[in-house]
Length: 180
Length: 96
Image (tube, rainbow over the protein chains, first blue to last red):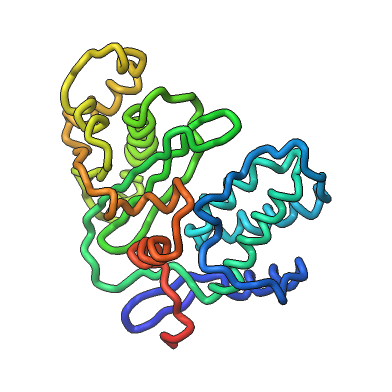
């Protein structure tokens, strides 16, 4: 947490550095995005099993990072679904997220000073994004003026039959968050 | 969240929600029954209710300006950086 003349910055730079050191990825390549656009992360039942304890501790650390680094939120949540029986391909994806964080550990959430107080919500969903059960994911974020106050990325609970229905479910997520 | 903002003394009555799907917007605006929407029943009325009270209004936004994209799909480097900056996630290593 840093206070400056024109705003406040929240970041977890030190934690990220320590985490990368802990998992021995100091020499890993820095990536520009946490996940490739064509990465088909599935259950990969034929792949080799990897150490579950390692995978889980990686996910656990990454989930803590998502409190300030919502740019990795989607990819971390995606990897976190495979904790029960992690395979090599999923471990590779997780390591890519760590590689991305390594390249961008000095990035943090900033709250500029003197912005207005208008609440605007954005919502989106990907239709049938999950390759295993074809459920959609809803993503929402709310901005108060220019600063981000609330966000979520969650796999929906039911299978939707159209993009409109998937988006409509995201609307519900926002309304639930804001008017409960 | 409404309650939290009220605690801070910020009264907000109306929140625009930006969505990039036209038919989802139409669905909340007009009461239409359709073979494809008939199963979206109770939840549907919940949002309609809030809309009629004026709490929310669902507006359309181009896919390019949709900030919530970052939470739903893997993006390429350029777009990812753009959205990240718009969400105010900034690199401060050179700001000190």
